[in-house]
Image (cartoon, rainbow, N blue to C red; front, side, top):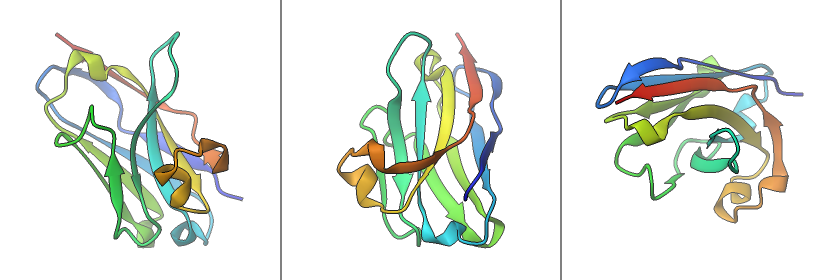
Amino acid sequence: QVQLVESGGGLVQAGGSLRLSCAASGRTFGNYAMGWFRQVSGKEREFVAAISWGGGSTMYADSVKGRFTISRDNAKNTVYLQINSLKPEDTAVYYCSAAARYRTYETRNYSGVGYWGKGTLVTVSS
């Protein structure tokens, strides 16, 4: 079983940057594809980015492409989301996820996501 814990959220001004981290338990972390989602209160959870188990493949939502970068360090059991040029509309709770297959994210078959973190709040002031 994998447990995911996000960190790095906080209050920042528009135009600033944050790096979110997701620490995973378990010695099999490297076997999982990882993804980030975000959710605003009252709205659907939105896909943000994903990375394959080896880190060789990544994908991003159009709304964040060019500003967000996902990466992972399997030796540290950690996945990161670097967020640059923050906008007020980026305000949300950001969730880390893990899936056995990268295709889960490619096909938007999120029922295949095996694990979710509890989220970290990012608030961007204007």
